Image (cartoon, rainbow, N blue to C red):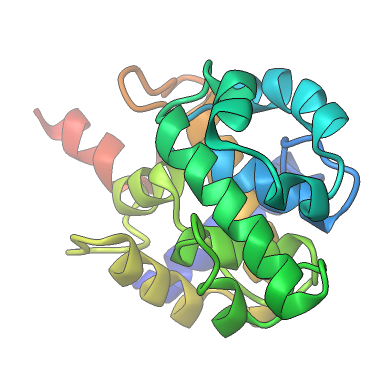
Length: 214
C-alpha cells in the first residue's frame, strides 16, 4: 500500500474513533503546562497529574519557582522520575523566564528550546497545545506507534519519525495527530501487549500483518 494511502486510512480512523484528542495533563495556564510537560518526560501523565496540584500550590508562578531551592522542589516532585535533574531544570527554566521573557512562556520554538529542561519534544508540545501552532511532538508512544503502523519507516530517532509525520500529515492536523498517536499508544497499541482485537487499524498495520505471517 502506498504510504499516502496508509496515512489517509489512519487519519480517517482516528477522526472517527478519537474525535476529541487533547493532552491528558492537567493545567490552567501556559506556565503550568510547561512545568507539567517537563515533569512528564519518561513519566506517566497520571503520575504528573497527581504531583502537580501540591507543586502549583507552593509555586503558582515562575517568579516564586525561580527563587526556590533544589531541595524544596525535589521534595514536591520526588515521586516523579529523575526528580533531582528535573528540580534543577524547573528552577533554571523559571529563572530564564523571569530574566528573558518577563515571566511569560515564549511562543517562539527557538526561544523555548533554550529553556532548561526543554527538548525538541517539549517545545513542540508547547507551541502546539499552548499556541496552536503546527507541530508534531514525538514521545515514546508516537515513536513506537508510527513505526509499528508503517507511517515512519527505517527511523532510528524521534527526529526522523517527526520529519516523516510532518511531511505526510496535513499541517492543520499536526497538533491533533500528535494526541491521536499518544492516545492510541497509551490505550491500544501498548508497548508490551498491544490490544489487536480492539485496534481498528490492524488490517493495515505493518506490525500486525508481520505477526500474522508467522
